[in-house]
Image (cartoon, rainbow, N blue to C red; front, top):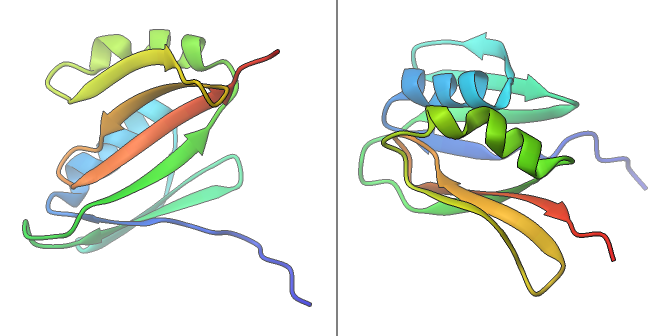
Length: 117
């Protein structure tokens, strides 16, 4: 049997620079690779690949589970002007989440934390 090292989403973007700035500026990812048509960011053993795509790209979504979701949201909320965001709320399946559309993509990012019982 093999060991999976990473499972990394590949997000198609029609403005790689702005999508890269989103992950670096809001979520404190570090840049691993930054080319004209491809970028990779890294945080806490997780990679996200950002690739160049036209505006007719399909939609996608992924889930980022974090600790201290309310602290994270309080830290970034002033930087969310102009972005489509649903502020933190509790889900009936035991998670607290906020949702955000990643700039210059058709990608919905769910950010969540398990609610303690």
